[in-house]
Length: 255
Image (cartoon, rainbow, N blue to C red):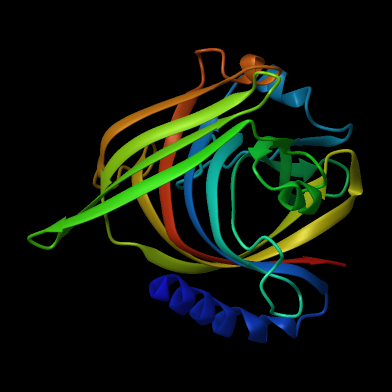
């Protein structure tokens, strides 16, 4: 459609100048994300981390007490390092990331310890961690009445082996902030390897257990389980933050 072409061109124009970085760019993308911050069973989570690594848990701020992030991702446009559209230029994923630190060195970042994707090339960028999807659905709708913008999102992911991650959320748009974030993602199978993700993102924190912004979440349900996810989502987990990221421009690079 014409609007899709305009979006792709706009994102390409924004992302291409980021090629002049020290690292080797692997891909660039324009995305829509919805993220849930959790505190889950500490012992179960520790079993998923390599030796010498532990959760890096914030003691204050909007990420306070978070030890696991469930991130639903709709990659609307994907570009290669040359700025040209990838062979498959969109994808949908749900990933689980732990904020981590290496005890010996103090190095910090994140590790993707599980996930589900409908695109195998996504799995390769994320060190092969996400599993192939049996079902992958991302449906969103927006409406505006008297200047109030509301949205509804439905995300459903499952694998042939029983893992599943899903979200239904209805919300009112709040006032977003804009920020630039650079994060190292370490390979859980070989933490000496990492990728760097540099993002320009808009962030609308719609509900938070610590900072208590105006609550913009109207309805909300999620499901997660199957495989070793059952030990993490055992009914005692707590959701700490509901984060809408409607504008998310990412550049992934390797040293």
